[in-house]
Image 1: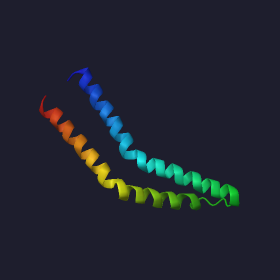
Image 2: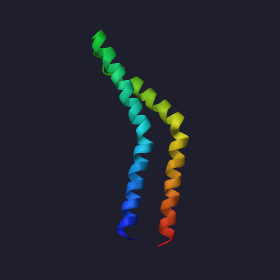
Image 3: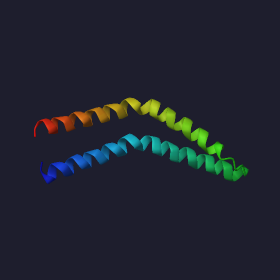
Image 4: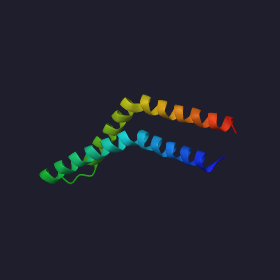
Length: 87
């Protein structure tokens, strides 16, 4: 196994990590920002007020983008197995 192949696999793995985790993290960031602005303007300091909407938003995001995420991971796994088979 060459250094170039290892570097390529690591680069692909990091890219897949960003593509799989990105939508959920981005939605959590946006919902958290909206909730914090709402809390600052209304001076409501309830901890569960920020937790529950983020949880629901992340669940809906995973529900909507789950097929894309799963196909991305399956294709990556297949490519890793192809690389292992050629060794």
